[in-house]
Image 1 (cartoon, rainbow, N blue to C red):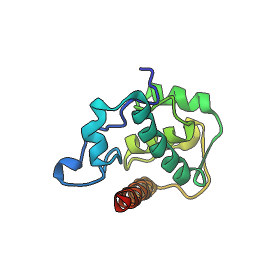
Image 2: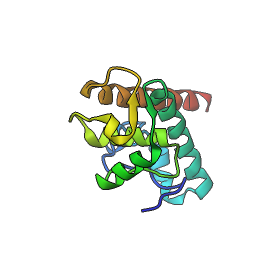
Image 3: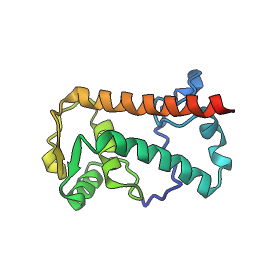
Image 4: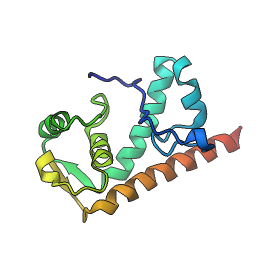
Length: 144
C-alpha cells in the first residue's frame, strides 16, 4: 500500500480511550485522534511531520541506514507497516516496533547500529518518543 503524508499513524492500540492525553501507541494528542476524520490533508500532514521530526531526533544518533533499498525490500517481505512518504530513518522505528522484544540482525535490513543494540533499545526509544510527545502536548496546552 502506497502511503502519503496524511496517512493515519494509528496502530490500533489507542490508550486515549483510557484517559491518556497522548496515545501510547501512535503518540498523537487525544484531540488529533478524535478530529482526524475531519482534518484536512494539510492538518494531517502537520501531525505526521511532528511525529516524523521526533522520531528522527531520537534515531539519528543511534542508527544509520546503509542501504535504503534493502531496508524497504525487507520491510515489505516481512509485512511491516511503514509510511514510505516519510524519512527512511522513521522506518527503523516501525521495524523495531514490529520486532518487539525479538532479536534483530539490523545489518540484514541495511541498517548500522551506532550504539549497543538490544531488546531494551526498543522500549527506550518508544519511551523517549512518548516523553517528547507528552512534553509537546503540555507546552501546547499551557499556552492556551
